[in-house]
Amino acid sequence: MDTQNTSQETHKNTSSTSSDSQLAVCIARRAMKIVIFIGMASVVLLMINIYILLNQITATAQISREIKTIKQVLGNPSSEDFGVESSQTTNQNQINTK
Image 1 (cartoon, rainbow, N blue to C red):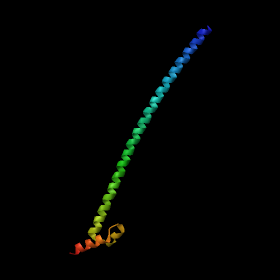
Image 2 (cartoon, rainbow, N blue to C red; image 1 turned 90 degrees about the vertical axis):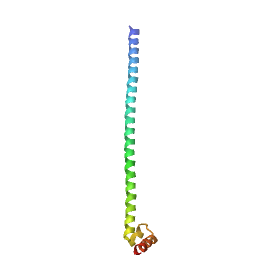
Image 3 (cartoon, rainbow, N blue to C red; image 1 turned 30 degrees about the vertical axis):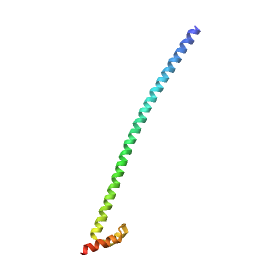
Image 4 (cartoon, rainbow, N blue to C red; image 1 turned 135 degrees about the vertical axis):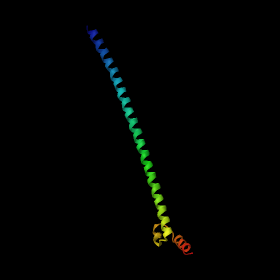
């Protein structure tokens, strides 16, 4: 009887170990799927963020160009503060007076 009980216990331990390893593999696969999904989602959000930043940079540059053009058309003498050279303003004023 003792040998039958020990062989049954060994069989149960082996099957439970096999079941535990299958459960561990299943949990690991699910964890990897979750990690891959979160990684893909973060990459998509990063791409959206870069797109928005590039649009903001482009819009800022365009506004700066328009302001510079308007100041040159108006002949505003205070345009030196914004990086426009005084010779350009003087040349623009000379063209306007002719």
